[in-house]
Length: 587
Image (cartoon, rainbow, N blue to C red; front, top):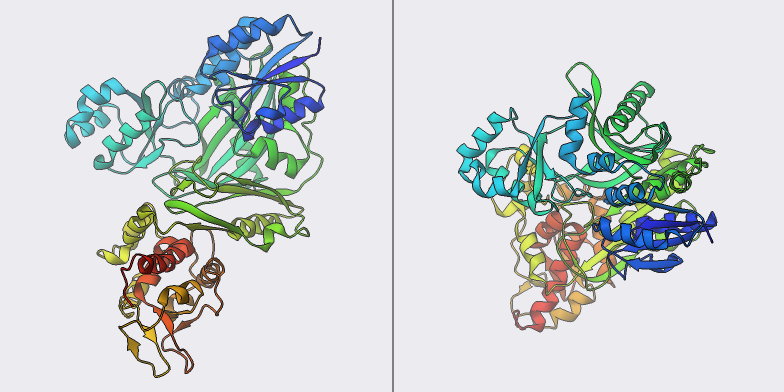
């Protein structure tokens, strides 16, 4: 009669839970709604159950409880701590009260708990599908204004579903015009058909994990979160440990602990875990922490299973498993002081045709890269992320010093090159929306554009771009004339890399970087790699004396690169060959 633990979820984030539980000698039973979840085969037993079905999970756990000498239940990195708590409470297993789990799962209840405890948290109100369909929110800007005034809130706001994770349906709203669509999206991502509207918190964000055991809270790391791409909140990575001042760190952790208590997670007989997102906001004279949210579980996003163990040697998942089995947690004491950096890589919209990873990933001597997590494969549809589950992949690197760890992770993330299918018109539409084709907006307006251009040009650079030659797909010959008759097979020349780019020295030497940190030259090198160029990728204002039968890429090429980075430039080049295949360009 082996000691057994039920683990909710069989995804990537639950992989470390299953493995560590087995190392501890426990029989593992993984539950998941999908029989094809990536870690199904890791567990000793798998049962397909919808993780929202708390009664179904309870029934299953009750049916096997007598078969084992000890039974526990837990999750990490999922949004189903309430299902865990329900089952534990019904079967008398170690855990937290179901009501406490609801407090930590429903953001409206959560904010009420923080408010009752006088903890720093934004003002808020909750809207439902019914209110949205029949109330003042459907009466245009006047109705929205009245609604906000009645609830004493003003822009900027944040709207998000009350019961989802991964930033799904979550966005910043800066004016009345944006409100109805943002509310509709957030409600659509909510299992209960409700969304929370709250004041926007300005400031850096931090993630914290903790193990709770009979009233004692053990902190398991605090990470700097790197959030980009407003109006959405896309985490492009995190770094552990944080480098903020000790007094600020203490203030964040004190607020986090108080929040755990306010939700009822840390009762004297309770065992479990907590994950918090805390912002450090400024009131003009001093910084103070404000609680974004606190969940009754260990974090997803690679923190509890990867980055904190790599940076500290401690194992919060081990502690959580032991606590769920009614045993005192161990393995929570840090034994080293390394830095661990997790970084994501992303794509513009389209269909994946090819994924290329350069030598930095395959270099066996690069001991600092710990893990590579691919979320996409050839043939998949991709889009610019609007939440934290639509990224293309993640890299984790660790090193004795912060600079080395960050550089290793960011270099590795940039090493992944994703080529898009030129037949997918979604990419074409995306590239057509470059700001150079419209009225040149101000810097402030450009900063609010979503999805953003890969490179954020200055007004001076936009003007310089407008002076480049218009595209005529001309062919250079040895006498420097442009042939409009295309006297040879341009398709083969484009695909073989026989092309030159109109010179844009102001941009190339600008020092600008794309949203992955690539310089203009690095982007051009990536274009050359993906296009399998047999000739150097050059930028010339005039062709060389021996530049014969070469395609010249002019303003549209640069616009595609500015809008979509290396992916936009490669798509543009690939599309030239596709046009010739379709006889859109005649020889």
